[in-house]
Image 1: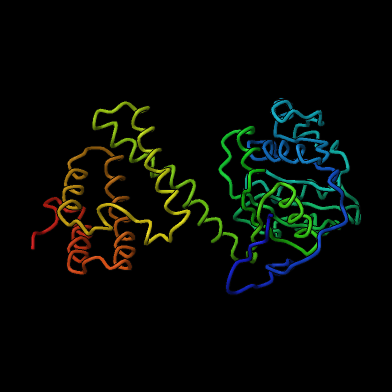
Image 2: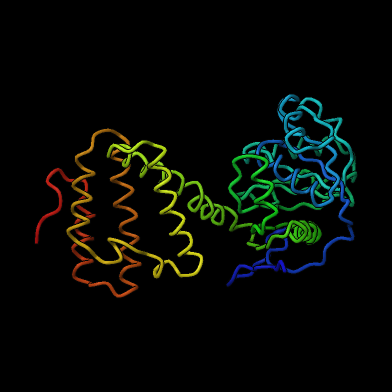
Length: 337
């Protein structure tokens, strides 16, 4: 049974928004009509997932009409496919779901607001899917009478088909905005089989930074490690398969244990000489990627030390490792004790 997850602690209400405040959902049926503005991977995946749950997806908008048509075909929809220059033809729907890049959000909101006169948005909703921006970026639509909010899926979407399955597969969504918009967003999450959480508008960027570190930065870290294995002579395909297998077991550990308990390997054991060997091998490599790997190893090693200390690793050994990491960028390497 899907359930609401609230951020602990402050429970603040955003200016013009609901923060962690509970609200009842608006009286919409599952046939709520939707227009998706920004038919990239996320927009197309959401359109597909919503249509599968009975929502009437009536239009998809992309910068180019050809892209909107491909998105509609990919999502299996008979929706209007519009380029940005045909935004005025957008049908009147209960919900406008804006899935453009963050930098285009405010301009998109202004263009959509310009299509409405007076309070033409009264009784209608606008939600955006940015993780870093709050509903305040939709102020132009709010001024036209729309209920505004944000609905950010904590899902890594690389293509529409797999993304739609993930979006409807028990994903977490961060919702924020005015009371009515949050109510609708929570209903959408429930009908997608997901779980909602909420943060204050002022914390959206911090929330999103955590998401980027977990998803995007993990991919970047993986890419760095992949390069090291390729340097060892493995094919990229074999190296990727091996590291994905390791990453999968790590994720499984994290799903049932706190980070300190999930930490394994060299830093968990406080193996001083192994860390020194790692650092020496990384320093011998040439090129920018090699320097990046050394920096990443040292920085995340510092973080791992804190986890290892929490689990009771030998303090003297941890101090030696800390010194080795701090001296990681010297030509002579760490000093022996």
